[in-house]
Length: 465
Image (cartoon, rainbow, N blue to C red; front, side, top):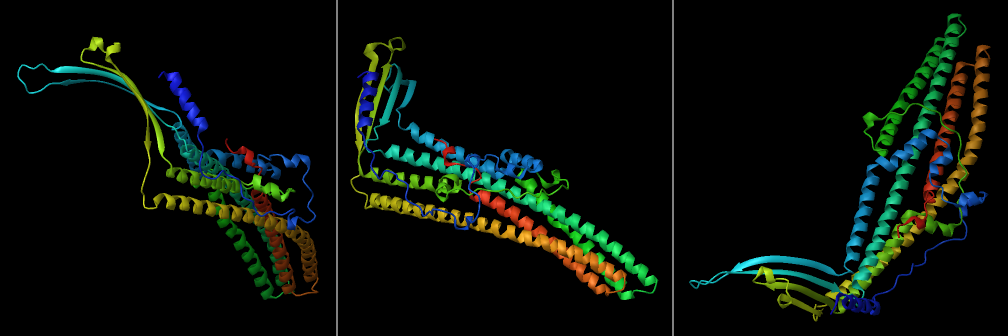
């Protein structure tokens, strides 16, 4: 049989082959028509519906942008996830190769003789090519390939999920650090104001107007705020170290200069809930894991059927090297072989049942991932809505407490109120300022978390095919 006829026959067998086991269909997942906590949020504009890509650009912070771009290059967790994806892809390629013939070439020479006297030893020369092909009549290899390709896609989605997580963690850490910078500026300004108030009290004490207790109280207030200002350095240093690790640098080799906190909380369109299934890489990963587990059922089911292999070989063998490639020295063989397990004490049945149970587990994991995704979106929609209202009220409280502090200090200078009133006003104003910063920090964190919960601009179409 010629090579052409051999390949033609093989192709016909493959076309006629069937793949046992269930074909994959994505199971339903619990979804809702609208987000409960969307409230009065504006619907997405046409431009918002596309891939946001560098999602952190909505914050308009060039320093954050520079840091985020280093995550992709240097973050070690992403390097590990990328290596896992390459490994999964290579496994799929390895399985795909088994759909094609395996061809080997052999060449050798041997010298043989016996113990009879005066018998001449003989050289034997041989050259041969051997080929084998698993016909895969029942689709075992194709189901395995289907599983491996789905696993590779799941690994790609895991990489996207790890990237998004690292980017979101970096953004949150960066905003927390800028909040610490703002808090330090606030406390430093308060220290200066308290120092001036102490000078006023000291002058009045020297003039016999104020009591020594007022001086001590003013000094205590000053030192207390100075201590708070110094303490901000602890958290800032820790955040700076965390950012260094996220961008793949030793903390000793990274420093982030003090900078302004940009005051914008971006509007983030949530879109339609059903689209969340296509926009979350973790959902895509669990969905691909379902496809892989479904294909594994077919792999295990195929073990019930005989394995058919075609083997072929062609070569030359001669004791005279010069006659090795003559027709009279040629050897060939071709034929199918069949292997079937006739008794396994229920091992195949158990393997199929295990594969079905594994698939059921992935279905449950998929639906739980979907539910968790909707919860995260709803949580952060609610957080942004409530925190926006709180920020507005807290802003009014800050303005009122500043006015109250200034008014109380003037009243103290005129001798109308005791210094304890000033201390209360100072403490109230500082507390409101700190609360306002804390609310702003929470709003920034919630906005980052919402973008992450919505997939960060990722889409399932980005999975490798």
